[in-house]
Image (cartoon, rainbow, N blue to C red):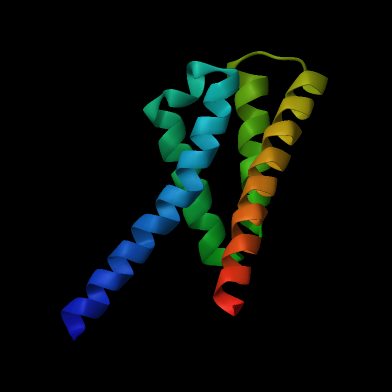
Length: 110
């Protein structure tokens, strides 16, 4: 029984990591292939890990700041363009996320 609980917790942790890292990397890579670099994977992992340990909703602000910093500092876009692109990717990420959660909730209720 203990092994089964451990296995479920490891699978849950992997699903949380994959569900937070993969969409941000994929959406960012649609605008620039710079997001495929491993150091940005580690950065978004650390943001998601630290945000989930403190207060779960900080993760969304962390993703927004992550996109903004990459566009501003790495890709050398202007402040306005960086803000627009980061908000665009952030809202797209959130809308897809809430779409899946809404459908998942309706399936569980019925």
